[in-house]
Length: 377
View 1 (spheres, one colour):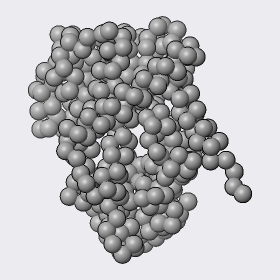
View 2: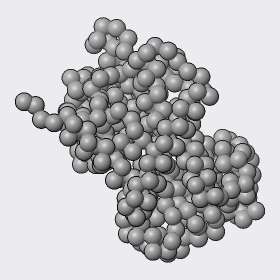
View 3: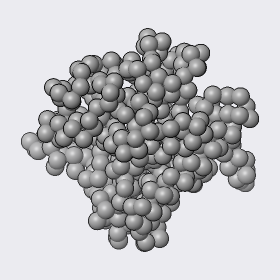
View 4: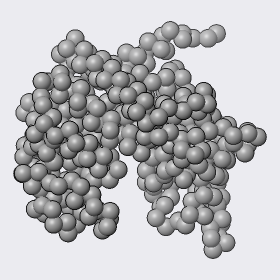
């Protein structure tokens, strides 16, 4: 926990509180995002850092989990104030971060701009450029191509591998997506290109339904002009929760946590849930879906494309050699397919559901690393 002063544009000095939690270092350096939000707390960062440990272990990345952030309202801060907060926060946690210790990345309300400030602050202290100190940077500063689309594309790669295992066809598959930000947009566009039919879409303002399939490009164009789905004439209007009840083959929650709950899990009309968001399904809803025979691909695998490409960015920065977009996508696909294979094998071995199997795979890897490192002295 760090407390630090920042000068506001008005000249007033305000104190801010920041956090950085490293869950485990047994696997290698810690890895996790930095978020700016009014509700950022030590408990939240601790929970999310453990989540990252599980995700990295499932995918087979040489990282432990971390998470951090600053408690603030980024919507009430100017660009200059955000820069001063970012640079001061980076300076405060400097002793515990670095390319071989803890590599931050973007998260809620942070992006390429903030990571550029963060990397520059670290580099100023080191006395030379250290692009591998953070990931999610602009390409010109050592970022990687394909980073923005990574999470959404990873969801699609996981679905392709799962469909092959289930002997399902992507062609004609009816999909509903809750969340139409960066991840949801990429998923909708890529699935459409593969022959799927997007029968429902939703964002924070509402949703659209069309059992015959929405024109995704028309919807994307509307959002580009109006920012939100509200008022889009491409389909029948519904609510954000209404999309969850759409009749479909695959439901993809790609927005907020705790969207599928004990209250609405009985109303879902799908065969498969793919968690593109973090924690969209509550434990109570998990049990209901299991009882109903609705399969669920958990978030720690389904949305791991983002951290996988962050890893590939870190590798490229370390070796000072960069790959093209096709190479990045191919390496991410192989990493995620291997992870899914381990999860499916664990599920068959233990007769567990896929979420439990994913956690087993992660815990087995983490325990093995700690056991082999042993205790010193």
